[in-house]
Amino acid sequence: RKEVEQDPGPFNVPEGATVAFNCTYSNSASQSFFWYRQDCRKEPKLLMSVYSSGNEDGRFTAQLNRASQYISLLIRDSKLSDSATYLCVVNLYSTLTFGKGTMLLVSP
Amino acid sequence: NAGVMQNPRHLVRRRGQEARLRCSPMKGHSHVYWYRQLPEEGLKFMVYLQKENIIDESGMPKERFSAEFPKEGPSILRIQQVVRGDSAAYFCASSRLGGRNTGELFFGEGSRLTVL
Image (cartoon, rainbow over all chains, first blue to last red; front, side, top):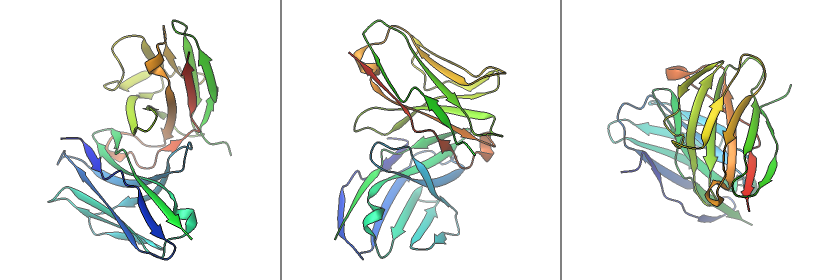
């Protein structure tokens, strides 16, 4: 089983749509969780941290379910500029492990 | 306020040559990480360093690859006798805290290595 697993997509959605990404991780000892965003041929950048209580940042909501080892990201009212690859990231001991990412394409 | 600086941005080498990639972390960051991203693949952890120490090199290939982060100067990822399979984007990242408290990683723009 892969350490961090994501559906690669692509998810094709129209502007204004709501889209959700899921991610599972294999090691129950994982300590902290993040979503990063990577634009084509650019460096990854932190989108948001993920907490057990769930957290929201504008149009973005992240959830963590430790029992199921599952992380989600919800994007409401999608914008063209949201088109990117979204990386699920898990911290185990001292290093961040990245999923392969889910590609999102938002069309007019 | 400079972010993570990597150079060169692009590097072309012939098989058998050496590649040296440099990374200067953000000011105030003492934790440096190297990741490799192959075309159409995810980021793969290679090595985690603090000043003068390798903390975790579990992702480094056993041969030809080495990394250092000296007391003075940038971190360097060195690939000896490059092969075509080494062609990839190599990203460096830094953080203020490490270990269990590693939070946000700040990435450089990457060094893209092409091996002919």
